[in-house]
Amino acid sequence: MAKGYWIARMDVRDGERYKDYIATARPAFERFGAVFLARGGQVEALEGEARARNVIIEFPSYAAAVECYRSAEYQAAVKIRQEVAEGEIVVVEGV
Image 1 (cartoon, rainbow, N blue to C red):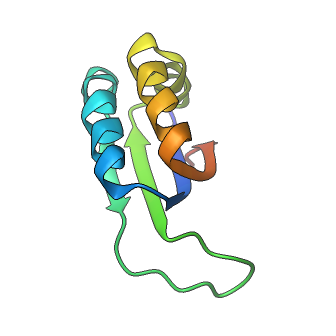
Image 2: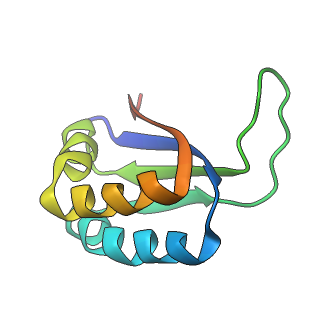
């Protein structure tokens, strides 16, 4: 079974409240077996526009990645994130 990956690109407007998002999202990530491969750190745009914060999260399967996003636990976190950050999240199936 192929793994699933979240690729998230964010510009955070309120770093203190973003910590609330992280704490609220943690139970969903734990429940669905998330492993953070990249979380913030140095970034350089080689093509196109970059966001300040880039995150790659590995899940045991594509289905788990989608289910995590749609879970009640994570949707509570989404409400916070959307107030304090702007960005995109895509789910990609691994090879």
